[in-house]
Amino acid sequence: MGHPDAECGVLVVNDKRIAHLNGTFRGITAPTDVLAFAMQEGPGVEWVPHLLGDVVISAERALSQAQERGHSLASELCFLLVHGLLHLLGWEDTTEAGRRKMLRAQKRIVRHIFPDGVDNCRTRERPKAHIAR
Image 1 (tube, one colour):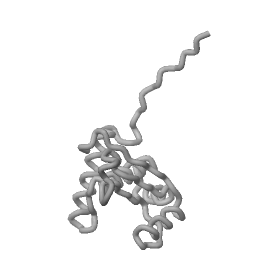
Image 2 (cartoon, one colour; image 1 turned 60 degrees about the vertical axis):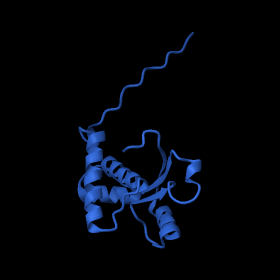
Image 3 (cartoon, helix red, strand yellow; image 1 turned 90 degrees about the horizontal axis):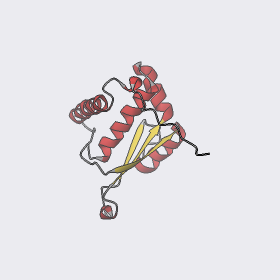
Image 4 (spheres, helix red, strand yellow; image 1 turned 90 degrees about the vertical axis):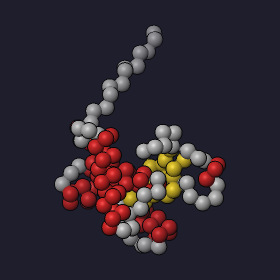
């Protein structure tokens, strides 16, 4: 995504918590699926040039959307995380053209990270710890 040393925080919450955050920061008193809080905007960005910001995901919204769309919770969470990361990088989806462009980018990024699909990813086996006796 062009920022190899970047960091971001990820928080998974319930609908009540994300509705509170949505109301506080966007004036919308309802739950949403994902919020992004960019740290690369405004005064003080020079203090943390590697910190993109925070992505907050509603687990309840993610589960509901996964069921509606007929895919796994893992797929939906991955998709929402990429969506939030794109917002941290300055992408916007306030117009129909912006939404389409962002959706294409999300799909491309998820396919790049998980070429066999999120549900088919295999983690590398960790070596077993050896205890000296």
